Image 1 (tube, rainbow, N blue to C red):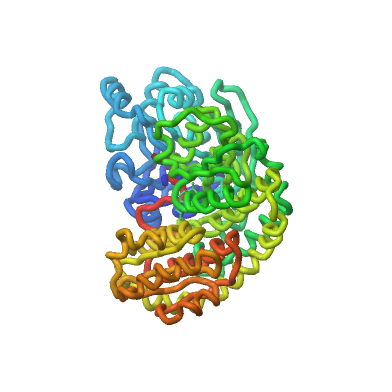
Image 2 (cartoon, rainbow, N blue to C red):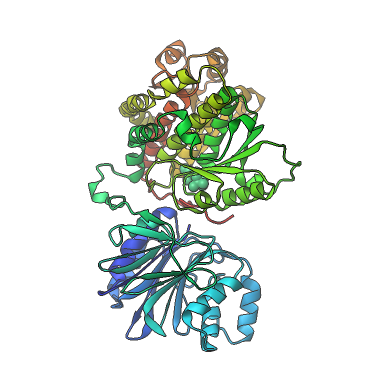
Length: 602
Ligand code: AGP
């Protein structure tokens, strides 16, 4: 979604603003802009499309200001255009805004009546006009910022500069993330703490209602009543945007290959199942039902974990898509209900909404989150960090395997607490996961060969049974996200109830199989596809592939594991397949069209 970056320094900030926006590109956007203060006046440059287009505009007339704000806009109110691009201005002021202003229509009318002249179709443009009118009435910039924060409805983060105080950057947060930092060269703020890398070693995370005042001397934070406060700080990883050190062509490919390290980090940090329990205030002996809630890839992790909680902990578990769940009508909660929310970014608006619904119903919420300091991590009753490290590619890969590894630990921990048998044995097997994922990655040349055969397909079908069904859905999501090929994941046994009508020799069918109790059932479903001239690409362990070699056109081998490990390992070739298909189609793998890394609107 939208991104904010701002800088105050002793030298012209335009290059830093452009670099900052590049770091936020992965969030998804369709126009970009900057504003600086130069010779006492606001200077604004905007462009539709990528940051490259903005950079060209800036190069043709570089602003010399040493204070500035910058923004990447993902259109919500009004089309992507220069007029709608941020920063937005009112006399003497410029602001960049992330989030949604729900009461912008009423405010627009009232402001117009008082003389405001709007130039854009955006909700955001009410912000500089509100600030302007307060300041014109003698209110200080700091107080005007807080007043505006109180007047707006919705979720937002704002960065502002004003000609009245040309040496101060101001920011305000409610609902949308904002981090500020300070280093030798001056101050910095961004909607993503990692974007501060190189400018600050620590990011201070604003809380709702906080404002920040950043000068060349330091940063001051104020709470909603205007008192000075200190907030949580996070270490900023200096290497995360160091693409020159990336031996891989894309962030996504690097992140796929980082998965064994991520798994090793998780299993090193959470050595025994009880280690994950120590992070959350839940006694699993008293839990009567678990509801797992998430979106997208995180939802598929939840769908898989649902099975594990039932199998290993013998707790009834259900899974829900956050955007649907938050508006459902509910029966009264049962004693012992628990909600688990899963989110890489920790900022997904739908998941936050679902979490609020759960808490309002008196149900404790624990969160599995990759971004420490995010809204979900702060607001849940207990949070287990996913430890995947920053994920830059829009398509989630290493965060998914981190979610599954942590969820597996949590399900085993719940089982142990509930005195279920065999937990130690499964925990021992989990220690082999990293090596198995490494072995699956070694099969990349075979994946590339398959990608070369199918990258021109118009549609693909993914099928799996049992724990491989959520993997099939995740594989299809990965493909459609970055290759723009239509893809669907189905439960293999469900094909004959309708989707089998789609089978034809032009549509590659990625069939996930594993030796084990469901193998014969899966094999029958795959043979039904073969009987209708389906073009089958098998993904599975060697024994399973051998039994079906007569019906497959290609096969991708993964190591053989148990119900806990097989789905995680089987994900690897699907991630690689999506990546190589998209690469062969010449697409922007890390920044697919229309998508945002962190979906902060409903
Ligand atoms: C994953 O590849 C997607 N980009 C998307 O489905 C994502 O998983 C979803 O938006 C949820 O995000 P979250 O994990 O940050 O909450």
